[in-house]
Length: 478
Ligand code: NAD
Image (tube, rainbow, N blue to C red; front, side):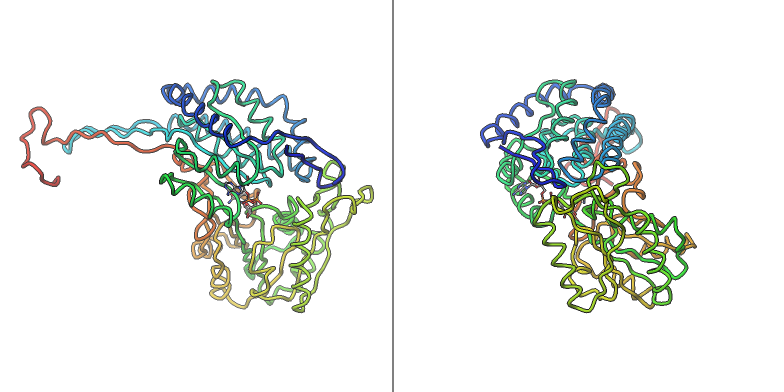
C-alpha cells in the first residue's frame, strides 16, 4: 500500500493507493496491447475529438484536484491549479494540432510515387516524477494517444493521488485498456519498462534512474525519450533590467515549487560591475514575493520540500557553501499561521560569494536555495555556463534582445529563455528537452507529437512504374 503524507504536516495522511504487483503490470500491458489495435485503426481526427471529450470529463474536478495535489506534493494551491489548467490546455492543443502534424504526405513526380505515413508504436510506458505529476504525465499521454498508441503510466509514489484521478477520469471516456495507471516504486517501473510488449518508453526523472530505465529498454531495443535534470544557468548581461518586475520574475524562477523544478533558475551569473545593485534589487523582490508556509494558506507562495531527505540534502549544500566562505542570505518571510516544524520546510536562501566548484553551484540543488556568482566577460560566462554536464535550460537577460539571442545561440542547453526563466518562458509550440546528460527526445511543439509516431514509407520508383523505361537490376537510384 502506498500511503501519502502531507509534506506540510507530516502527521496528516492525504490518501492511500494499492501498489500494482508485477503480475498485474503484465496484465495491464497486455490489455493495452489488445486495445491499441482498434484504437490505432481510428483516424487521427477521431482520436483527437475523443481526447477533447476526455478533457471535458476532467474540467469539473479541477478545483478539487488542485487541493489534493497541493496536499500530497506541498506545492502551493495556485501552482497546482495552474498546472492542472495548463495540462488541459496542452491536451486540447495536441488534439487540435495532431491532424495536421500526423497527416500522411504523398508526392507523385518524376522520381516516383512516395507515401509517408505516421504509425503508432504500440504500447507506451510513461514513467513520471512527483514534482509536476499532472503536466509531466500529460506531455506523454496526449501525444501518445492521439498518434494511436495505448499508454500505461507509472506515476511517482511521492505524488500519485491527483494524477491517478486524472487518468481515471480521462480513461472513463476512452475504450477500455487504452489508458491506465500502475503504482509503485522502482520494481513496478522496472516491470513496466522491461515488458516485451512495450514499444516506447517516455521517462522524466533523475539521471541515476534514467540509467536503469535506458538499460531495461535496451533489452528489447525499445526507443526511449529521457527528460532528465538540469542545472540551469542564468546569465544577467551587464545591461540587464534590474527593476522590480523582472527581479520578481527571476526570484520565482528559482523558488516556485520550492526550487524543485527541472528548469528552475539554478545558478545566477551576474556581471561583477552590477553585483551590489543586483543583490540589493533581488533581496527586495524576494522579500516581497516569497512567503513560506502551508500550501493551502492565503498569501503563501512557497510550500515545503517533498521529504525529510530533501530537507537534509538542501541543508547540506547550504552548509557546505557557508563552509567555503559563502554568505547565506535568507529571503522572504514565513507565514505566521504555519507551524514550520510540523512539515518539511526549508526557508529560501541566496548564497553569495562562492564559485563554480561548490556543490551548490556544480550540482542540481532541486530545492529552495540558489548561488549568486560573478563573472567578468561574456566569453568567460558562456564557457562557465557550458562547463556543466547537464544542458536542460538556461536564460539570458539583457535590454538588447538581439544581443541576448546571440549569446543564447552559444549556450549548450535544449531551451534558452530570454528575459525570463522557468514556466513563464514556455510555449506550447516550442519543443522542450535537454542536451548532454539532460536527456534526449522532445516534449511540447510539433516535435513532441511526432515523438510518438514512426514515419513509414511506401515507394514506387518511377523506373518501374507502368510506362517507365526500367532500370538495371540491383542499381542504386540515380
Ligand atoms: P526519480 O528519477 O527518482 O523518479 C522518477 C520516476 O522513476 C518515479 O516514478 C520512480 O518511481 C521511477 N523509478 C525509479 N526507479 C525506477 C526503475 N528502476 N525503473 C523504472 N522506473 C523507476 O525522479 P524524481 O525524484 O521523482 O524527480 C526529480 C528529478 O526529475 C530531477 O532530477 C528533475 O530535474 C527531473 N525532472 C526533469 C524534468 C524534465 O522535463 N526534464 C521535469 C521534471 C523533473
